Length: 150
Image (cartoon, rainbow, N blue to C red; front, side, top):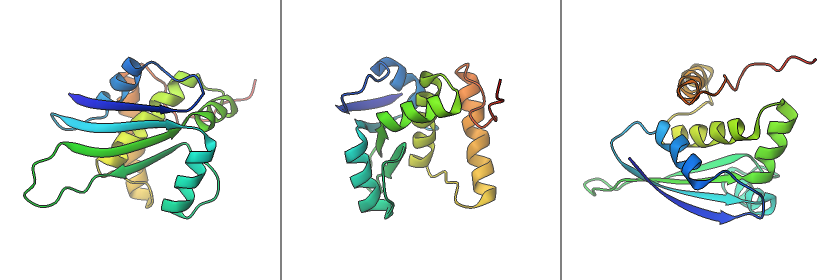
């Protein structure tokens, strides 16, 4: 079970909280966890991306895992920050339903909070395969398939 705290800091239309919760819970690999999901516009995403990753411009999802001190019981996984305008643009550019791309970004971020990464090729393959499996369970196509032009 997931305790999801939603912070809507974007003027964009976003999926219902119930959908966000289903997607986050599908990627949860433990019994219980707390996650803060903040939905932002491009300016906030760009500022966070610069401050924490040293990169210019907004990005689709940022994850901030909570590091629990030894011996302290805590279910907080961390915070996810998703940039609504970037998700919308990427979905359009990739020819995907926007809800499917939202689901992918939530699942992707949740996996990051649980220690998955994609810096090294071997780790990327593990993470991508896990994403594909979770999304398939939600009835969503493989997000890494190339879109064929019509």
